Length: 295
Image (cartoon, rainbow, N blue to C red; front, side, top):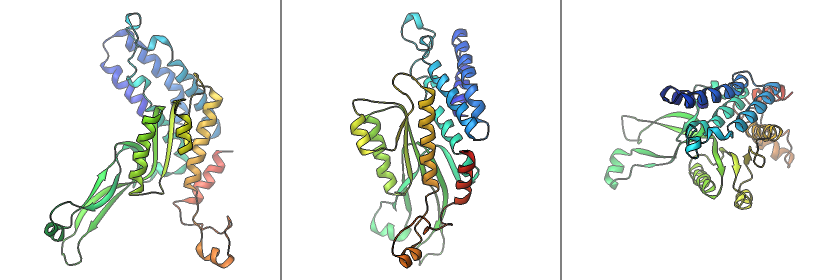
């Protein structure tokens, strides 16, 4: 797990016995969350995970953990992995368990760059004609589910193929400590890059808190935002409700069906049952798992 490994790695390097003790306390608190994350997804485990996560995040607010002055010199800096939002990567992975996507060899869920803006290599016109090398641009690393693709290509008149590989984004999760105008601009950049490769990709934002001064501006332009903290606290019921709706939004996207055009033309209007049953990856499996795991 991402969060656990980050804390464990720092603990191994720590020479201060008090901070080592603090790392052990944090890992013990996180182990209660980890128990649910390592189990199969079901509503009982989901509720237990949400409660444990709420307790863990509240526990990290203990003043002794935060280095402020000489009286708290054994605490952690705000940039320390103890306070890092990498734990949300673990939560997202858990929520995606029932989909079967994490077992698909061609797919990778990770903090990674994706490729966009396919173009011929910039060079002289004669070299473009002679070599026709395709290039891609890369995004900043984001927590995403990408399909790894291999491509062979050549000009019609050429003999040998050129080989290339790229990562095509399917699900993008923008994870923040606090969501404000700066973070909104980062999301906007990713949106523009997605438009150049997969405008139909899912893009969701999840953060611990939101800048109240920027909330109206942000939410008027993007409602696909999920905030874990209610006021100054991590209320268990609030967190559970937010994560459940976040998961629902993802699975609605995974289960989305395409209009069967022949049925539409035949009947002259669209209805839910006039949609294709085989145009999405393992659609029936997603729906059945979703219904079973949600009770």
